[in-house]
Image (cartoon, rainbow, N blue to C red; front, side, top):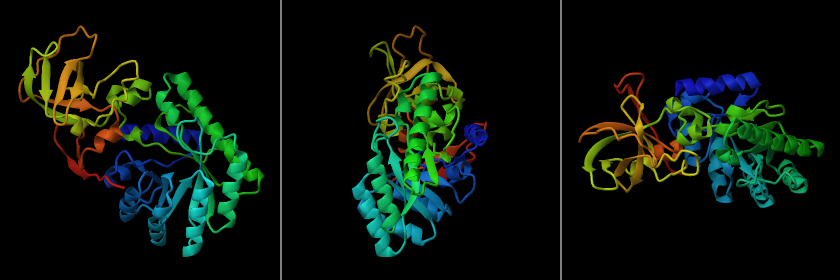
Length: 362
């Protein structure tokens, strides 16, 4: 984990932009303190529960990077009244009206970034809609809120394979955000923040001219999806689930080894299924984190994981006796971590050095 954090911090420094790490993956104060440049931030969150937990731990600069709903604005105001510089994001006139109205009601301007749709992936104002962009910006700036800038997320980068495709995704993300900022500025509106970010694009952007900050989150742990995209190697994956062999079924489809880690431990995420190498529900490793041949979690029920050789493999499955323990690397670190309430921290030895609490909720 420490190596992963140092890698991206050095890259952002070399590109001359600030890093605003996304804490949605870790949901842990201890991990967050490793990720942030200081204990006060800056940081990105995906739930107001995260914002409240991290605020209680002393984080004072956060972006809530999920489109704001009007009923959540009272919690935003409460955090800002405590001295937390929490900004929100939005992509519609209706959201902007709600933010402006609540700002006026409390006499506390809520800073907002306008979300830009860089790649048709999910949410945001389309780059081809400058009139809407200006209208939202003018409403925020003139009706009691604060127009802080623009923000985008290249979600389609999670389906880009190879360095060239990832570089193109990063440039598309950068260009969309910078163009949106230019639209606002040409209308005489402020746009101090130009925020982009995803773990793949953060690692493959060739330059970030016009960008002020980058957001990324899963890079702290990485996972099999990131490895499948070529963003990291298997030995960069810092998160695993420790599982125990609880039985064998030699007559089931060439032989099953059963563990006590099903989808309640690993999650149902099958993000590698669409990649060149399908890792099932996770890649099986020894206690040192080294893959055990071609062994994957091929099937999962609530509390059972079925270890099988990857389809097409000719390598024999290694013998794993009853009680043997294995580490399973996750497809999606965010989803797997969400199944647990703590991290067991290792540092080069099998001994657990610390337990770091984590939380869920909204």
